Image (cartoon, rainbow, N blue to C red):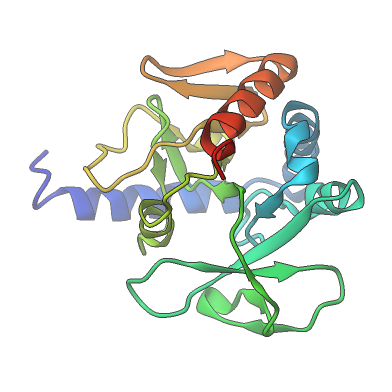
Length: 219
């Protein structure tokens, strides 16, 4: 593949294929997978209960993070949804809580209407696709890559998707940012120099806490 000429078309085709496959999953099966992933996140990332957590409103068959967010907020976390301030700029995150006034933005997704802009310490990032090195295929707008590149202190980057979205490679480019962890219905994977490593929830809790302390201890 010629990365400069064929890659955008290849990614566009793969994106369409993976979204179609995800949307084709029966509702009951999707709900079951959603429940498994929610439990893995709840048990594997207890640190989220005291953090500002950015998440995305579910779109086109994605994992629905709202169940987890309700649990995290009841334990003391704050939650935020992304807002596109302008094209080709980093996302801003506005605090969200149940019942807050919302307005529709990009892709007709709801965004809190005028709530405070906050800086998430952890991001639950939806995956259209993901590869064996922990890189993410998104929707093509580059918003999360720009957002992460603009952060002086990196949030915990938790990519969330389904096993049907796994790919050998997305052919990552210099602007692509790998996840710290990837969670699917098959389990939790830590992303390291050797690629994806399957870990249990106890080991995940330990690694996530250590990573958070390493990044935010000087704050």
